[in-house]
Length: 484
Ligand code: GAP
Image 1 (cartoon, rainbow, N blue to C red):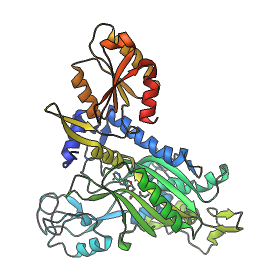
Image 2 (cartoon, protein in one colour; image 1 turned 30 degrees about the horizontal axis):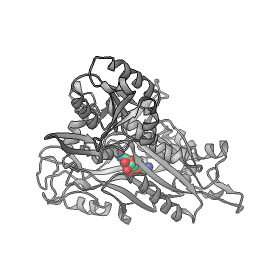
Image 3 (cartoon, rainbow, N blue to C red; image 1 turned 180 degrees about the horizontal axis):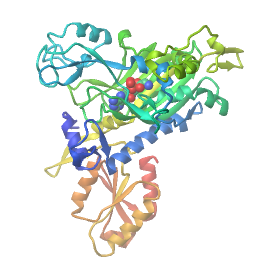
Image 4 (cartoon, helix red, strand yellow; image 1 turned 45 degrees about the vertical axis):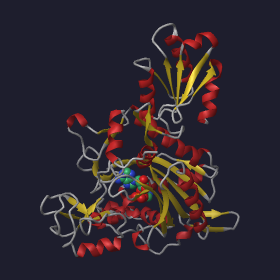
């Protein structure tokens, strides 16, 4: 297989075939924001659906949730994001571009992946040999400064009651603050999980790399609540389950985080990584699986008790300390009573946190291939059928002799069950190529023989093999081959 070596090839295919466009392109584009076109929206929907199916539909111990993006500002004080969710940045004195300290190379040849927090802090003390990733200038930076990653906006029309709120930087907090609601309204019992897919927003300092790191993106997160002491076993479980989910991809690995890389809430974290074709072709995070301990639920118990202070300080989070007066946390509102053991505790949380956009990019990159057909280059996307944007295309061989009428009938019938595409324009070979490039697993062609024996050809994308299938069997044939 001719695998991708340059991200530009996938960016160009995505633009050419309507997978992904630059946002506001006719206005010159908006940095790091992207729109999904007709094929891209189907791909992303399939990735989302596959995640939901394996996480919620197929498991009896996980329920779904869909929280609002705007949340009470105290949520972000309690979660730690209001105070700690910042990158250390510097500005290049030559080109004025700002970069994360941990994204600065130590010299021109070095790549910048996986610099630990400790190293970044040490690096920040000595910037003399660091290279600006934008212009290549060495050692000409401002003093490092913290840069808050959460977007702020104002809610409310009146000056008196308007308040600063944040666009959520992760979907996880919506799950934690609904933990009690879900417990009280369903039959779930610890151990169980809550899953959510939704948009998150971060004012990332370094973007680039197409949809890999953007300022608006979609996350698919599970918060799995378990009894303290069973967390390590569930952590192992989730590592295995999530790694398997991606297994159709090549170039995948699990990487344990070093202690100094861990987020403020995590006891342990492992990344599922993919070898993306950018930077120096290095391994990059696709999904993080963290042991968040009981940190978040405890924090929200403090946050709930800080409301009075929040009103007193007119919502100024910088002037508020969380209320951590002595409290029997284990008996608090976000605790769980285990009827079997007779014990009450604050559950521990294992969190597999994936990115829908980032995994869509990995699926695109992984599916990309080039081969040669009769001396001509063929571009194709070897998507797994479950995520292919179009499952089957239907063609009449020529636009006459009653072939279009039969093809339209097949198309109208199949589209009730699969995402299909009808095409009668141009040479059939070119129509096959277009579908190969869109990653369509099967093409069905009505030809001269169809009228004689009621059969059509079904062509498979990867092998390009053709089979004759009876008209009455086409739907069942696709069902079996697509496993849908
Ligand atoms: N709740 C934990 C959390 O948010 P994270 O490692 O910051 O952890 C989880 O994010 C996943 O979300 C990442 O592995 C990635 O797939 C996706 N993600 C995070 N930031 C992103 C960004 N700026 N653009 C695209 N995807 C992003």
